Length: 135
Image (tube, rainbow, N blue to C red):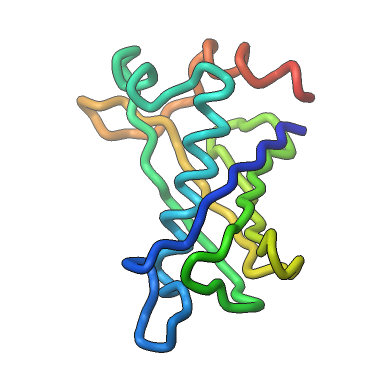
């Protein structure tokens, strides 16, 4: 299993009138975790795109359990539990570092596509090489 953890502080601009992190921001937090996990494995989006691929999100899910508050330090846990065949399934759990509670959990599914045809294709070999050591 590929596991990565990233810390982030909830910014004032992320909060709503109730002083909670706005629900839509959690998808951005998932992206931060995903991007940093991939960067740690030399799989930046910039490199993927220069290699002739794009990687759009095709499905997302989130279940909220507790609010996150302004200036709170959160931990984004990002996991890939199996080698992808077509879709890349990435699980996320966000926790409050300060309160020790789970804030939300969910997943994101992405696919590799050919930039010209916009059709899904199997993940490229360089992607498999970078992550297969975790499985």
